[in-house]
Length: 184
Image (cartoon, rainbow, N blue to C red; front, side, top):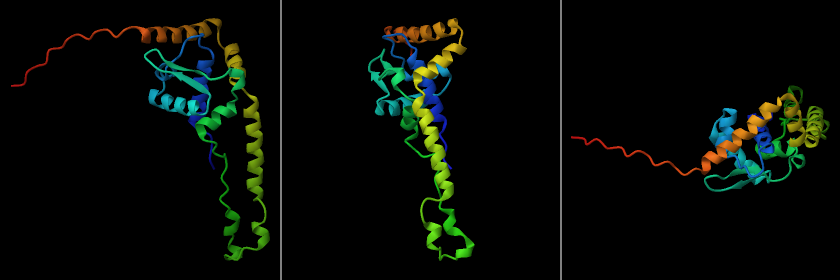
């Protein structure tokens, strides 16, 4: 059986942060990773997948980063799951019914006719789950999170990302000249 993995959870969390950044702020993958305490390489990989799916757009350069490619109410949770999980099904039927010892490799036609009843049940469950995910958007999730947060936490989050972008725009400080030790 296959399940949606951590990529879905991380991808949705990353996008919720993008849904709430101030206009003109483009958080980098490192900013989003640092904010959540996760690997920046992993977040960068997720953003690559999300960009290919048209969910985020990027801006290059030192102060560049990522933004949602469309409004948060136009991005479903299913869009994100499919982008990062690659559309993998939740269940893979192994056709175990053909291995029954009673048939000794001479399976009767009825045993192979149609979709396996177990597989059909799993397909129905997955269809229902996908329907639920398709009807939940980043905007609806963001509203749920906002209700749980204090006003100060929401403001602090937006200011944190704004500050990080401003810091990336600053010119690099010249490094102190270090004298190399001569090896004798």
